[in-house]
Length: 198
Figure 1 (cartoon, rainbow, N blue to C red):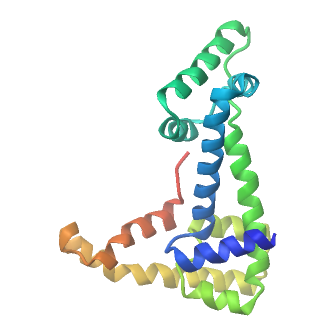
Figure 2: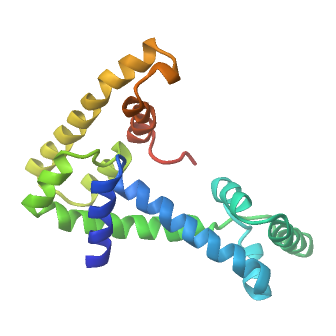
């Protein structure tokens, strides 16, 4: 847990985005890179992934970007072969979704430990904070009524910080907008939509 707590602190302090979203992106990229290597070199794993139906739409698109054409072709051929030989209907059990969900839950539990520390709360209050989706997940796990109110107010305060930048961008072209304002669209989108849509 201490390693995850350090990673959460690092992402919170160095990046202007939800630290859970940022760590999930890193996690998924690392897993995808490992899988693309394994799909080429481990026939058993390739066939296991094929028997699981491959990946969900989002992760298949991410895998396609990370892997080369040979890797993608080998995996797709294995999936097609499994589908053609199987008398069962096609079903999908994305191992990346499962692994990401488990990691996300662990990150949120680590975040709950961190939020107990007043020094961390001070840093958190002055950064981007959690996206609405992760805040909702965190509040569903376990927090006091006082902490819920505080976390929601911090989120509202971070949303307010981007309003002037968004107002500037609404009246100017991208290149006329101050470089410091340009990230407001990405931050605001992530805050409300999370890091991806399934």
